[in-house]
Amino acid sequence: MVVDNIEKYFRFSEIPDGIKEEAAQKVALSPYRQKYHIEAPTGYLNDPNGFAFFNGQYHLFFQWSPYRYAKENIWYQGWYHLVSDNLVDWQFLGPGIEPDSKFETHGAYSGSGLAMTDELLLFYTGNTRTASGKRIPYQIIAKMNESGEIIKRQLPEVIGNVAGYTDHFRDPKIWSTENGEFLAVIGSQRNNLTGAALVFHSKDTYDWQCLGEIETGHKELGYMWECPDYFELAGEGVLIISPQGLQQEEEQYQNIYQTGYFIGNLLTKNQLTLGQNLTFTELDLGFDFYAPQTTIASDGRRILIGWMGLPELEYPTEKFGYCGTLTIPRELSIDEGQLLQKPVREMKAKRGLYTTFSNQELALGQKVSEALELQFKISELTQENFSIDLCGNQDFSEYTRLYYDGKKAELWLDRSQSGTVVGENYGTKRLLKKNNRGELSLHIFIDISSIEIFIDGGTEVASSRIFPTSQQRFIRGYFDKNVSVKIDSWDIQHNN
Image (cartoon, rainbow, N blue to C red; front, side, top):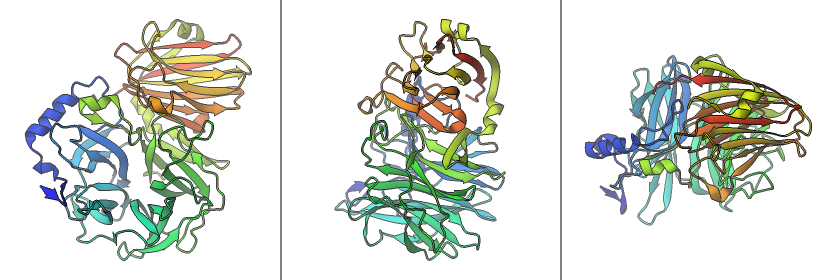
């Protein structure tokens, strides 16, 4: 099955059962499968897509290449569909958006969801290539009814790229306006190979017109802005982007690609200036975070889920036939011009056995659950030091370390001894917080192969993949004698 001398993407039902069974058996051998984070059943998971509350449930999709690591070259890139009643327990439904039309022969790429009265509108990018390799993007709308049936419109809404911009044109995020019309922001690249975000308008989700770029005052922030997400929160306009091509600046922009946000004016059809010379702030300071998407919860909260991974990196799970995981959902708020992220309150329902450790007990090392929630309340920080070793083996020759340098007032994450190495070319340490004195709050979620750290009520967050051995289930802490510490721990209940 060949299109333009390149293998065509299959419908999932066309893939032989033998290949599916072989892939599932390979995944079952992995020691790294997560307990409560979302992973693909097989293959490659990346961007969260179509996140929306519709028909009494949360719907979430992720971009999915189920047989990327199969022996046979089965090229299929679509969306996988999940639903949840509570944002933390997810039911896996199987393929959602499939690359089954001539407008997506080379993959159904990322997009968003918008809940309407009786249907969930899904707006996404179809990727195609000509025989010469030229990319032609299509922006496509599908609708899912209350029975879960997804029907695509016969023709795309936007064909090709916009004049003045290259064919790197993808990942529409749609929202409705107060007057019942529709706007969408699409990640773009100018002809001079710099990143931008274009805004489109429609009165009825048909006949989309390009209004122009969102103005942020940044004309050379990377070479492509992927997965833009615009929303309004606390009377402010927030634009999240994943720009590719940023150069490292001291401790900033350490990963292969970054994700960050601007806060500014509200966008309208007639007002596309978010602001001038706005500050671009990294959204997550860990080793593995990209392409997040937000939605509005049933009670009005703004919720974010991200991909805990990065493009073009190799992860240890790949030899077991799969790769990628999503973060736990996060509640967003704004405080003094900063976007705060906290684990959704629904995560408290996952708490199991409770334990509290004293500073002295933690100094000796403690065996803990493989799926864990930890809270540290640390005070009296002046020039004292501390270190917390997570996911350690019994003699702590392997561990993931958080440490505080009292002289510099800096908190660091170090995964150089975490187990199987990943992304070493991009460093093994990350600065999580600086100029911190007095008190420090750490809220940490550990799964089999990931760690998420929320600092001081979500002012900073760090999401990272780690790949420890089965023996790395101990924690240890060292605190200078003047430091006051309160440590709470919960096992996390899971369905696996």
